[in-house]
Image (cartoon, rainbow, N blue to C red):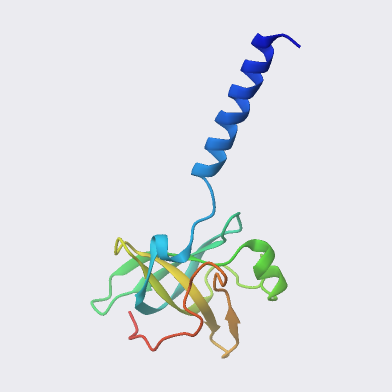
Length: 142
């Protein structure tokens, strides 16, 4: 193999590895605030069943009657499947209660710990192992 081909291949490998690292999985503390627990109640508007984390989008009705769109990060799709949550577990339009932690930038983004359905069924959706708090904190409802 010529030196030019080796250098080209090495450059390609280095570029690919840096690109992969920039999209790498993040720790809970990098994006979410363990000191900002929250509870959100709203209807599911969209579910993104993607890696590295699934995202649940909900429409939260505020006290003044206006709606806010929130993104709630769950575990990996594989982790959620092992916990009994799959693509069909929660239908669009389902009213859910989510307890979790708000994003550090205070955007309408949260890391979800649990989902509670109207019938009282509770599902753990948290990103355990990434630095998220081990137990849910009492939070005031948003």
